[in-house]
Each structure stands twice: as C-alpha cells, then as structure tokens.
Amino acid sequence: MADMLVRLYALPDPAPALARANERGVTIRRPASWERTLLVEWVRDAFSRGWADECAIAFANQPPSCFVAVRDARIVGFACHDCTRANFFGPAGVDESMRGAGIGAALTLRTLAAMRDAGYAYAIIGGVGPGDFYARVAGATLIEGSIPGIYDFSLVERRDR
Image 1 (cartoon, rainbow, N blue to C red):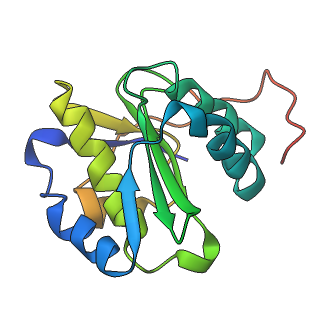
Image 2: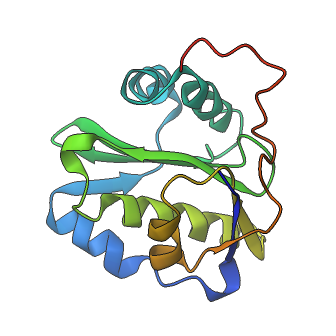
Image 3: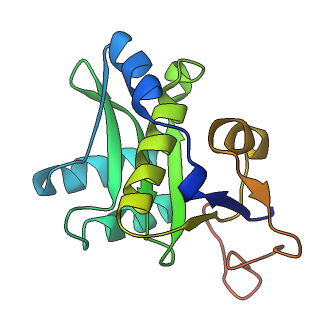
C-alpha cells in the first residue's frame, strides 16, 4: 500500500464533521492517561496487535497524540498521529458496526487539525488502505514511489496476519 500526503494548511474545517458525529451521540476527544489500557486493548481486539502497539506510543506524548470516539460510554473509534514516525497520521479505525456514520471523517479531520496546530504543514498517511476515503475527506494525494515505505515487513516475522 502506498503512502499519501495531506496539505494541512488546506485542511477542511473539522467542525461540521465533529457536529455530525455529535448529532449521532458520538464524542470525539483526547483520551485521558488512565484510559490507555482500555483504548490499547480495544484497538488490539478490534484491529491488530501492531496497531495497538502504535496506539500505546501516543500516550508517551503530552497531550496524548490520539483521539477517541465514544458513544454510550463505549469506544467506537480512534485515530493517532506521531506514533509510527513524526509527522505520520495513523493508525486509525472505526468499529465495524459504526462505519458509514461519519465517525472516521470526524476522527481524521480532528487528528489532522491537531497536527496542523502543532506546526506541521503536511501530514503523511502511511500504508493507506482506504485511499479514496482520505482523498475525499482530507484532500490526500498519493506519494509516488512510496511502496513499501516504512511498513516493509520483509525482515520481520508477522504472526498476527
């Protein structure tokens, strides 16, 4: 999968996406330090051990470099930045039962806005799966020649595939 680039200085305003999520009863916020284990375990169970490892790194930053989507006191999504590498967005994901409700867009735009507010002009989305989603939501464009990028697992035995 290729990497994508987002021009943070041209990022759409996250407010409408956050308002739509809120109308559906979903709050997007930074997790508190005492929620680390809960979030990391949720990411591991819902997605993968590797993503959980990356998400755990977010809590080494102050404030944590991630956001969580919560509905009815239950985690339904997350998005991180500056975990895999500086200036990288991700990992990010939404519970399967909640996809299509705009939560991914709200998480993506809120997290990218935090990166912009931290001083970045661009963000890299590494090893993109849903490229069309990121192009539509954040104006992301493919980075030519970025395969395999930093996610070259040819030297690492993977057991969670």
